[in-house]
Image: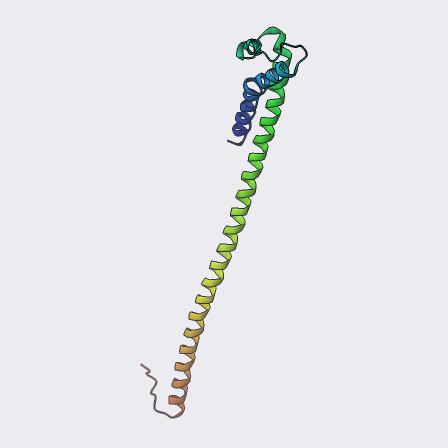
Length: 141
């Protein structure tokens, strides 16, 4: 799943580089390029998808696809890192909560053990007192 996420982000970056960034750079080049007629509306017709796949634009299309792919891969790595950090934080919080619950459980169990030992020791003392006073008979078959 992790490699698929990186692959999808890389492909999305390649498509964004080809479909969004390259036409934007072509438009900026038309607006700021040399020549007096570059900002005329009729000159914007060659900035589009068909202009991207033209043979003379292929080197720039490849460059923007490569740049977009690198950006997409870096974004995929960043998403993966953030997912691992969130998983680590979740595990740390879970460990903290489980440790607190275990301490609380041990407190309750130790309280019951202490109460049980006090009851047993008080009964033993009472039996001991009765035995010394000879009020208690020990049953023997």
